[in-house]
Image (cartoon, rainbow, N blue to C red):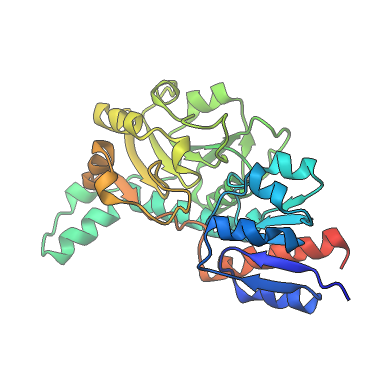
Length: 316
C-alpha cells in the first residue's frame, strides 16, 4: 500500500494532523530542520503544511516531484510561489475563513482603544494620575469608516461595526456588487472624500507594497485615523510618522509593522529605525505584535478549514 506523506513545516492545531492521519496520510514534523534539510526530503511528499517558517519558492517546488498540494495555515500566501506551484499541477490552500472573526474583533478593539485613549489612561491611573478631561474619547457613531480590501477580513470588520451607527464604506479593486447590510461599495475616490477612519485589509503583493504612502494619505479630504491589521509593508512607516506629525493622521492602530521578518514573529529591536521609535513613544499609536488573527478559537479554525478543503478537493 502506497501511503501518501504530508510534511508539516510549522506547528498547527492537532486537529489537522489527527484528521489527515484518519484519512490515511502519514504526517511528519521536523521542527528543527533548516530549509536545506526540508529540500533534501521533499521529493517523497504528497503535501506540505506551512505557516511562515520558510519561503516555498520555485527551487523548493521543483524538488517536490510528488507534490499535489501546499497548504498555508493562515490567510496570506505571499511566502508561496502560488503561480508556479499551480503551473505544476500543485493545489495551494489557505484558510482566511479561520481567522476572519479574530481579525474583525481585534481591529475593532484596537480602534476603540485608540479613540478612547485607553492605553494612556490605564497607564496613568496605575500611577495614581487622574486626568479626565485630557482623556476624553472620540465616538465611532456618525463617522465614516473606509475599508480598503473587502474580503474575509474587511467583511468581518464591517460586520462588527454594525451596532456603532457608523457609515461603513469599502473599496476593492477586484470585487464588485458587494454592498450589503454591513457596507456600501464605493470608488477609491469616494473613499478619499468621505473617510474618517481607514482600515486596511489587502494582501501583500507587488501592487500593494507601500501602497499606503505619503501621496496616498494626502489624497484623503479629512484628517484620518489608520488601522492596519493586514501586512506591515502595505504601509510605509516613514510616511505614516510624517503625517502623524503634521496632523493629517490623527492616530494609528498597527498590528503589523514593515520591519517584521518573514516569520512575522521576530523583531530585532536594535535594527529598528527612528520611525519605529517614534511610534513606540507616541500616545497617538496603539501597537500589537501581529496577533490580530490569533485567538484560541482561530487556532483551531485555521487548521480545521485546511483539512476540510483537502478533503473536498481530493474527494476523500
